[in-house]
Image (cartoon, rainbow, N blue to C red; front, top):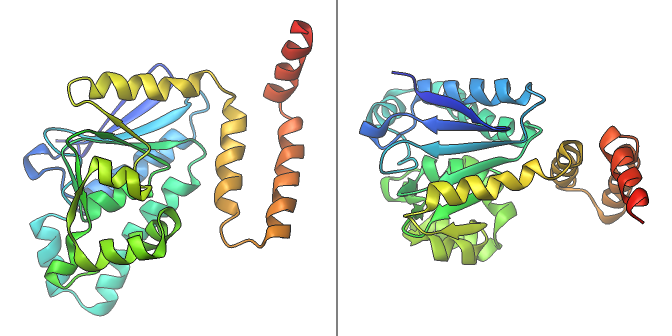
Length: 252
């Protein structure tokens, strides 16, 4: 059975985590397959967005038992290599040109919550549950903390990673971790309708916007303004911008 089911609808690539009998728990094979699919989608110029979702009842429940057993039996260097492999997944998500959107239903816990947090946008079913429970088994949600700290306040991040409690979609939205919440009965249709917005805007403008937003991490004010100016000039040179301006002038 394939770890990832890849389908395309219109200009949107859907990547479905396909271990429903394991609540889509992360293992080496699933992580490797997801990386490959993201890289492949990044090369397809006709695509406008990528959606990551889960098969079955849950989005992703974290690491599976075999992965935890492997962690407990590995050396520091082996565990470091394994952790860096997971970190690479977050790097790829940020580096992919297109919006990467998590469509979360059911549970997104531990590594699954980390995966959702690592995406550019998070859409959640009203009944979805989130959490970083690693601390309960002496573990740390260490890799996703780099992203969590950029998404929420320092105090919220501290609470989430040191108490490990589950929280609702509404709470996740109040923290700044979820963009939109949809009813469970219409979740799939609502996700598709939401993502369709990317078919009506400039692909090149979205690509440049994502690149600029993440490049600004850690920049001081003057450097960020300069990066914005350069991106502004770059956008002006694109076919999309020139055609868009021409259409606007024709209307006026």
